[in-house]
Length: 202
Image (cartoon, rainbow, N blue to C red; front, side, top):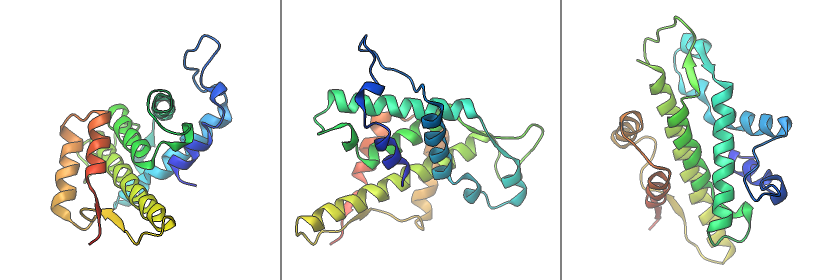
């Protein structure tokens, strides 16, 4: 089950998210929080993004930042359900969910080096968080493209959707990585940009 799918699964009962005062209710179930946090960390694939073994052993996670990230994504998903014309709370697509995870990863920087450690490859903690956010972002676009292709096939259409560039396109990836490190992104701009990268295969 993907991170976005698990987020949808945990949104099944709307009463868990809105209290009697009609205000948002934060996650109160430790099990739910742990599942969402675990799925987020797994989807980040942070150790796979680090080529140096010493780096992999020296990366640490801020559990409070992770808890806040999954809370913020959960909150925004409820917003989409209430204020947008989607069929139900589980209809928020992968590209929105993963863009949100990328956005909050850039904001909260949940991954950091252990005290006193200086990486030979990564200048600062923000660089690894930018790598993680970029990986989440691109993964979300691929999931969305695959879902659109599957939906088209179900309608009897032979239409294939994909990303306008691949991970092997070094120049494009480096430009995005630089942008994630040093430029400001809003949630909405990330989601819109992600959708603009989806193309039909001729």
